[in-house]
Length: 249
Image 1 (cartoon, rainbow, N blue to C red):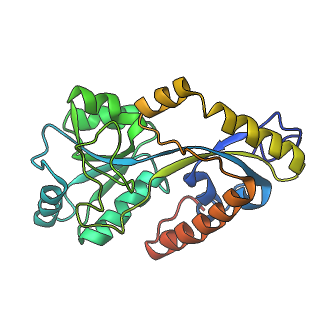
Image 2: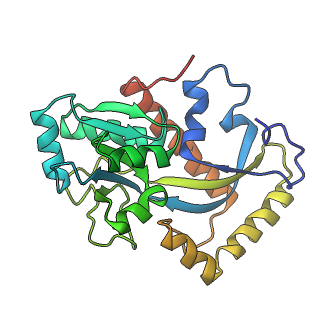
């Protein structure tokens, strides 16, 4: 809400995610509306969601995980980063597409969720790659699949969910710089150009890629991003309704 109510001078911006676009639909007591109070400036990066298991899990691939869940309906515990987050939505889509039922355990922090997966207290975790890639590379957890359209550059041997036959589970997360809705268009243009220029720096690109982020090689325009957000909002609002995903009202 601080950014939505900030002075529209270009000095206060928000790094928005898909979850933020859905908050108003889930938490009606909020005093701001993502669609009405904020406008997009520039796409910073996308991030795939990984389906991750610990060493105690018997599944070594997504197909085995699905079979394990079918054999034990409602018994496998699945951690996400909170109700209504992209990781939660991915878990809901996977359950629907695969015809399985998981026990949802929402966490506030990915570090605590990973600790419980590593310790065997939780069976699997849906998380942005940036939050768990160090554990994956260290071998303390295993990624069974990623939800991006293409394999991750960091985990090239890990298949996409689509490659595993579940193309409908395609929901990588994104980070878009947002400004107050009444920010003048010339200021938005300046910010857009500055961010897109910064993202051409190869050292920055390498650092973000190493953390699991996916960066575009072309500059996004504010108008194009507004169309993208409108489509995203319509799509994922419907997903929330179809699967009765609600927050505190």
